Length: 104
Figure 1: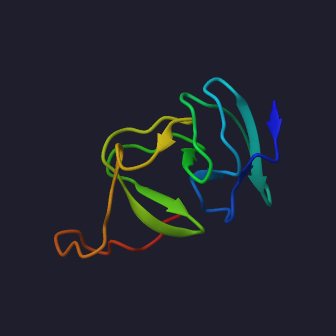
Figure 2: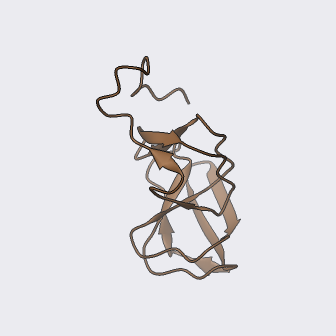
Figure 3: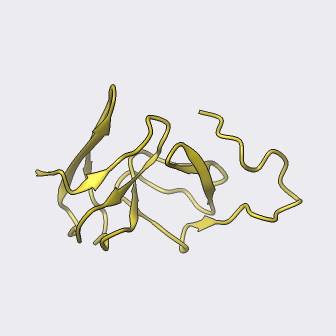
């Protein structure tokens, strides 16, 4: 198990950020407050990139630093790399109501 290699900043976050390069199938432990996660990575995660702490269904908010940073453009499983391939920006989107509200 890899400890101290990822950071979660807010208890509402559903992603963690890699503090070093992480390899597929590594089990990473991350947490904050009462929330603790042991996640088996489903792909390599580059330093500074995000991975899902839990399943994020298509259309749900991606939350980092306790803020909505985007929306899942497909189902994202725990341990998946979270990046442009599976998220979409909500900035400047007049077609989505209440786009920046963190519902969790």
